[in-house]
Length: 408
Image 1: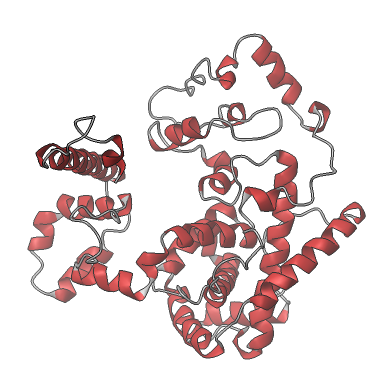
Image 2: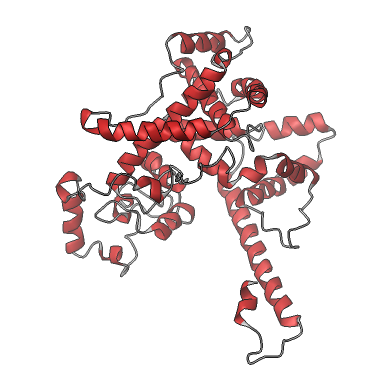
């Protein structure tokens, strides 16, 4: 398997197999161990939560239109008594169709939404999984730092006094070895389990080959991009500027252990959002990693070339299966600002115009337009598929056409 994936025979940290590892002899979690479970059970007994058994839809979010689809009150009701997210389809519907996520629960929601925690994992399994991910990330980070000690400190233009001082402080205080915002159970009772997890993480990390020359080039680009990240955000203001050092470490660790993707310009802005919301170095790394793995082609050289030149890979059918919702959002923005874009006289004006779009877009209108375009595309693709099946010469057989033709 490539360096970016899990070694053969070693389940990925985010997989259900990994989350269940070492749990075979543990007891099931009792209601007393989970605060609020007894109260929720009483609500179910009273008939308020019968939808958990598939009989009813969950209660509508309070506050009517305009409020978040997935509220702090609704989110716990999507789990069963063991902590499994059993209503995954409803979970996604509330987020994507009913109005988003309440900011107060966004940290917990994103861990499920981006694949850090499997929906089938229990509360107890997630505790173990969080520990596994913590140990593995820390060893991965220490590995590239040991190979390239000179790269532990960010190369910053001395004219940027604030960032230059932050980089110096981060290195002097040992920030490069500590992990931001991570809370894990490192009690003595976990010592035996911790020993096994550390051994397993060490085996995984030692199997990965790091191309120092390629990583050095990636770090050079990262050190140029990180200072350009949205430093106007409160998260990076004043003492928060040190969070840019954390962002840098996440990007370098990903590039070191995913050489097929490495680093592409723009990743810093995506990971920045994960770090700002989750406020945890480990959680931000794993959530962004699972996202990048799903979208890895778009960050590889051939994917970037296809985007720039507008070419479709020859092996794809006429309907481009690689189209994602992000593409329709981009198209909606272009259509929304079409008249203003056509007034740009040269590339300089075009760049100035696009940079000025930040914070000036009507997001609701853009998303509505992108959603409509996406559904229209899907409907047309389905209709074209059936038209093709209907116009093809019918094969002689017992049925007018074989059922498998619909899936070929």
